[in-house]
Amino acid sequence: MEAVKKWYDNYPKEIPKSIPYDEKPLYAYLEETASRYPEKKALHFMGKEMSYAELSDQAKKFANYLQSLGVEKDDKVAIMLPNCPQAVISYYGILMAGAIVVQTNPLYTERELEYQVNDSEAKVIICLDILVPRVSKVQKKSNLEHKIVTAIKDYLPFPKNLIYPYIQKREYNMVVKVEQSKDTHVWENIMKTADSNYVKRDINPKEDLALLQYTGGTTGFPKGVMLTHYNLVANLQMSEAWLYKSKPGEETVLAVLPFFHVYGMTTVMNFGIKQASKIILMPKFNPEDVLKVIDKQKPTLFPGAPTIYIGLLNHPDLKKYDLSSIKACLSGSAPLPIEVQEQFEKISGGRLVEGYGLTETSPVTHANPVWEKRINGSIGLPWPDTDAKVVRAGTDEEADIGEVGEIAVKGPQVMKGYWNNPEETENVLRDGWFYTGDMGYMDEEGYFYIVDRKKDMIIAGGYNIYPREVEEVLFEHPAIQEVAVVGVPDPYRGETVKAFVVVKEGKQVTEDELNSFCRENLAAYKVPRSYEYREELPKTVVGKILRRQLIEEEVKKQEDQLISE
Image 1 (tube, rainbow, N blue to C red):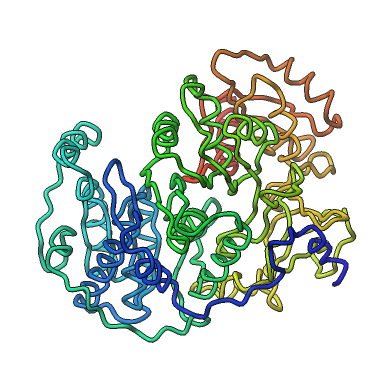
Image 2: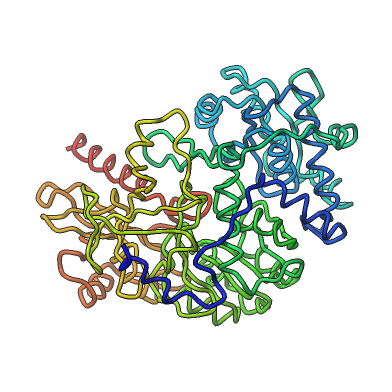
């Protein structure tokens, strides 16, 4: 195993190989920060700000109210909110009440929401007023006992709070009036009437769950990932060690990544609160809005995803805005194209490095050093106390340096298992090692590389083709803004390579030109056999391209052609 730990040689001297982890509930960090920095601004939301003392007080009131509804230790409470103050208050309030957070995407359809509420056995849900019709239907088909309803306007400054209902009516063509009842509770009333003296439950950080986080669900049913307080605390302390130049009480973090995704939850919300940073909340990603906020609010830390940085770089008015406040960005959720990294660093003057993680690992396991040696195209080095290895497909045998295999990781941030799913848990957790399903390799210096998801690998005519490699080449073409490469059914080769491309505004490129470009840079068997131009590509909320959806669309198209013939 010693050969595997080569990454330690490339650790900056400021980063420890091992950390003494706090054995405390996750919410303790909010209480500590509020005690040390009571007047410091915690949240900025569309012009309105809230101090750490106010944030802690409102979380305690929320905990008290949940307990008054009969929420006991280990009960599940769902949050169905975008990035807004209520998302932070309810998250910490749920943990203070001794309950378990179930993060729920506000974009979920009724069917998706019903599955998650029933699978998690959630008793209470917090949602926006515009989601009440959807939530009410699910409430009738589940064990949900209560819904707590809030509105974006609840935390807007004057006069935005008066104007917002009219904007909502125009945007969503609906006006929702919510009245307090036995099973429906109005957020504003809670904050006016609840007491901040909640009952502290005994928490065993290593055993008790803080979070049930559902994995994507791009294939099959989503699985509930069980993350303990200790898992999340450990990943938080690792983040702090890795970003050792960030100064407690002095940073401003831009929250574009949604908190209902584990990446935004850890690297923005929880990290920001532990560090006593000011967190700028943005409910959705709009490139122009983000550029304006950076220019005006001067964030220093900006965790994101490649599609977020691509969206900003391709905005026609980019040069109008000053991005020089940004010191560090950790990019995750999808591969970071090298030219995106270089362009963003040039524009901002900050550092943008690629990291890697999964819902099952709280989420981060690897990253490039932010201020020292990084390798473009690599996901970087394993984090403190995180072991990693590459194993040969279908075995537990360790691969040689440079040999492609499945990446497995081990560490204090690795989940307890999948909720009510022992079979799937056994498939991926063996002797403490989590088998990621990602194919990659490690180089001589301990830097890791992802070549692709095991399930995304294309086998064409007996050759293994990794979509990421083809995408990296296409990204280098000056006309390409975004690209997704997938394997589509082919009667002769079994599968063949198809590229879906989004062309930059004002640019043009033909299939023949793309074909020639690929042939100069790729072996013939890897070159896409067809290209399809799109206005945009289907993505998850954190910008991960939904390859599975593209494949399904292609299969359906082929089936329809056969029927018509």
